[in-house]
Image 1 (cartoon, rainbow, N blue to C red):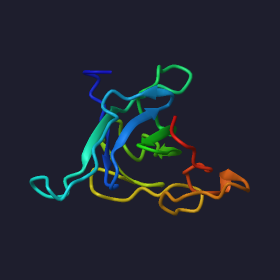
Image 2 (tube, rainbow, N blue to C red):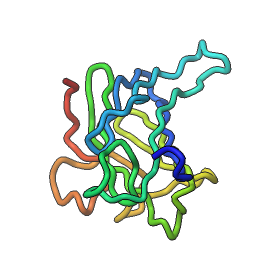
Image 3 (cartoon, rainbow, N blue to C red):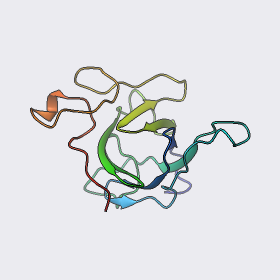
Length: 152
């Protein structure tokens, strides 16, 4: 993916516990471990980040570890728990592949922003990422999948 001119998706841990690993579309990210922000850091409360490239390939053609247009499966591992989320990147007509995105990760919550700081809401109800109920039709719920699972 290097040198293709595509943007990246930067993920930031803003939760009080460290993230030990991030899996994107079935592939562990090398940069997936992110310490918790610390008031002792200089400057204070600087979130740690992981980065993954964007791709123009679809799920059938790519090897994982990249963000595709459409649905992307994340598993976020904290020290004692993990949870699954689906992040939906908008179509290329709205956001060219050269654009970067930013995901801020708290516990059981994700917020996706574009280069200009606009929160990109997730269909169908337009609500930012939120925990989905374990029952019911997930097609009618926000993008985080439930139930949340214990870390291995």
